[in-house]
Image 1 (cartoon, rainbow, N blue to C red):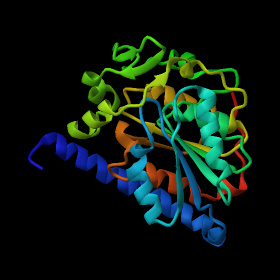
Image 2: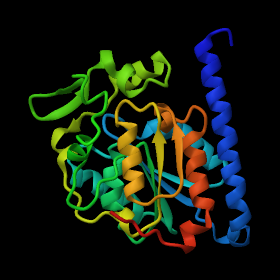
Image 3: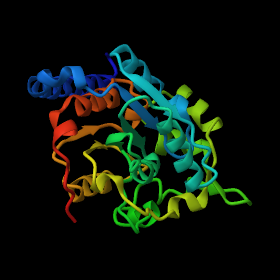
Image 4: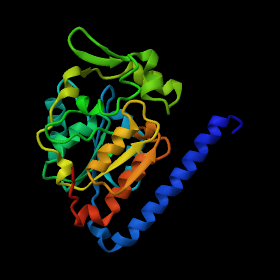
Length: 274
């Protein structure tokens, strides 16, 4: 702990853990009588330039705590393909589920989340567009560091990727250099038009939802994440660092569990207001 940055990260992690623990305890008190009916199925949807393996930290924690977790592997070849891949996994669920999306995956779950198997949605540092919107235009409301960096490159056939030399700085700043390097060299190229795909029906307008805001996010401006949450009239938000999908501290997993345990997920639908 001689390194000041390590001390700061340790303090942040300790505070975050305590904060989540308090939230869990307050929700358990209200939901204990319905514990037997608690949702057990969780479906995770990754974002652009990544694959399902990035959810490993979240997966391990949720499975250890008794949840049935499925991870969607979007091909990223088109937005419709990604929505179809998500619905394919939803069709495999044997009970109602919570649908979780990270980054670009937020747009995917917004479209796919209208499926009858979905009880609620969790947006982890994610886009949350409304019907008639796309994440590219929404991103212009609060431009991110990544969007202004020039790190997003495009292939001759229209797929985007992140410059490996800048991947750690803009996409995985909370991870080790070694882990970020592996992710940079194994990134899944995302078809450029995916970011311009228009939402037809926004699932968050009819189903309970929650946003995990990454306070140090450089891929999506945290102010945009807060704006999404405010517009959707979401009463509970959690501040976290950018690397929360990979879950070095259990941030995303505990946030999902908090959402699942809350009575309002099962009993009180959320009415979103413009």
